[in-house]
Image 1: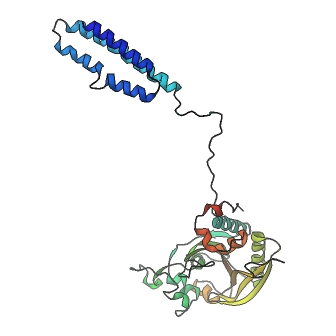
Image 2 (image 1 turned 90 degrees about the vertical axis):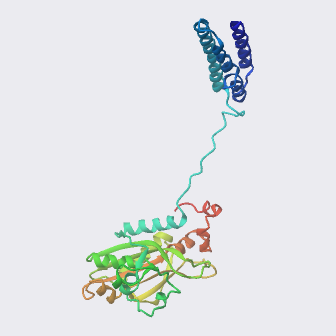
Length: 340
């Protein structure tokens, strides 16, 4: 009687497996026959009603029957895995390309600028974004009543200050503190470039933001003159922006340089935002007081410094008329700005 039931159930299971066409149907068949409430499990439960004399014979019969059914199920599962590719696809189609990103335009310009300076013999120097008043203002000959030191122009940080003699902590407004730190820890000759983010409480418009990138160069040695500064600056900017640039030096005032200049440039026959000349750089000879405060004798050594905002150069390089576009992460713009 048991043997007939087993044979009938085996035929039923094998027929069900034969009709299965996909993984979903196979799972339904498994639950129907092999789950805890399935027919195979219930058949195995029938062993409990057998007498002690019948159990050895029935046990052998049931185990062989179960192995046969289980092997049929596994064979069907393997066959489906080898042939079921899911939705119909064309294997000859090319794969979906993964887009390759590129360096942000601001950092493209920065890296190009640093590379030029390195080839001119400058070493790279870095400093902290969170600075002290001494390095950001005092050591750079900035008087205590200078507008830049006002809280309306500079981001000061609340809290205790571990170096009271250095004043309050702040977000650096320029990369010039890096120059001070180098001069205090390195004897001339000095030839370095400093770069990084700076922070100012400016109005946000097409040419200003709360944060910007700056690159500065510093040279301190015996016999350094304005001619050295002018030659270095013109060589650098012509390689960065083009050999057809024409320069104009305008006298200006910076607390840390004397004499000081603003530098404008133009290309013959072109205008930028309706202007023939565009300011690109501030520069000058390092103020003797700055050298003294860094422990360098201004009677023996002289030097020059120049600095510029990377965003302004990027605007010229790519023809972008609004600085804010660089920070909006708009891929329509970024895709247009090819690497340098």
